Length: 298
Image 1 (spheres, rainbow, N blue to C red):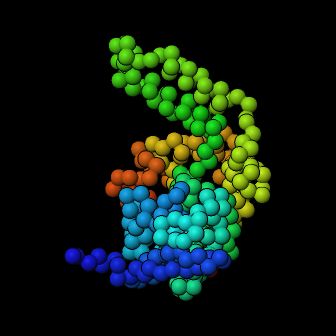
Image 2 (image 1 turned 180 degrees about the horizontal axis):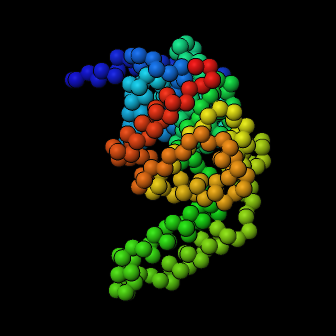
Image 3 (image 1 turned 135 degrees about the vertical axis):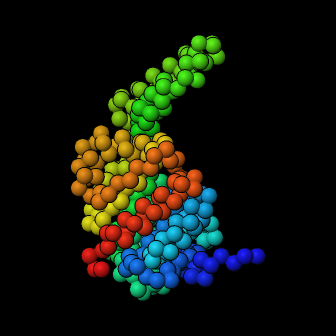
């Protein structure tokens, strides 16, 4: 079996949370340090440290090759870690303990950048970035899902794209398209998107702060004093929903203008950057931005 040369500088280990539950982490050490900022990858949703189509493994190895130390880890209750997964709104303590372990095991770094996709990006703004060692955050397709926001994204992107599709019109003229059902769905989404904003009681019960989690995400970004990179996929409803929020909401619009250091929009990319080109782009954007935006202590 061929040995992966990258594995020479990759170390797997366990570390305990406050309840003594063991979690697993992997650190990728560069052969030559080019950054005093380490990169911690926070996974999105109930995934584990490898990520969809091994995305996080590839990103970690790419960044390590560029001289950036990287750590991947599993939340409690996910992958090979013990415990019960508490949901993305409540994983800030896991992130903070991973940062402490990263700093302890990599004494050459002075601060930490956190990279998160989808719910991972949301978790960063819901407390993950509050650790004093966090100097940078990288948000990829942040999750701000609400019934209202999803309906707006469907109306703005899905239905308009279908009108431009020749196959859509061929189905209509051939009689194979269920027009009544389509119109009913469109009208329903319009009502959800532009009607009165509903109070989501279920979401409010999940945390002591009774605001909806996107509002708490906004506060997290407003309170973060470091540097922020935003990366959005062009062909992804989650990204489009977030983009609609930050352009239509005044508070979000002003905060993004003030707090986002750079933004990259990946043409045609899907939610998890599943092609080789998209995967390389997201990793290169991350490493280049980190190396060109050192922390104030470097």
